[in-house]
Image 1 (cartoon, rainbow, N blue to C red):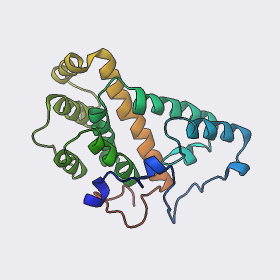
Image 2: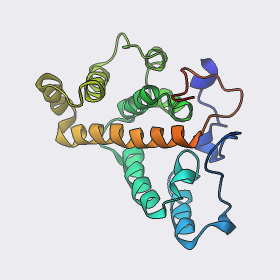
Image 3: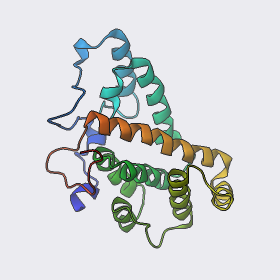
Image 4: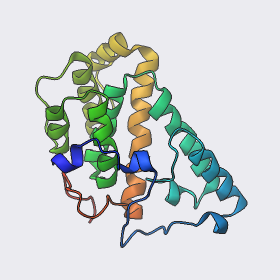
Length: 208
């Protein structure tokens, strides 16, 4: 577990180097073999705040217009959301755990820790448990996200708490970060994108 949760300078999100995966379904496309549309999107991603093509982007390039639209949404939700990074990353790793997306957990659990999320909370989320001793905003995000996936909506009580804490923009950003990382996690699972060999995995890969 410690291997998964550490904030490493070699982490894929910081290096931009894609992990090796023996059964990855969408092989990496060399820059020189990309279509003009694919190259335009790849250049936009690599020149943006992500600095690399890791995660779902290689798969998304098979549909360049979709890739461009999704990556712009993701850039907002990663880097410009109205939510505090700590709770934003909490919602992301809850999504990774829900989908059993090992790569998404590998990429974002270190970011959640770096943003200030308690390691015990990260560990509980990885195990699919409700964490103890959450801060007020963390408890709201946990309940809102849990209800949204379980019940396909949220009740008035948690909605009102979320609006009071985050405002209407924050509520929409919370809905969106859950939905966007659903798409990311689904893509990673379908594409068989996995962390580098030797990394400890906190839960079983969905569908594997």
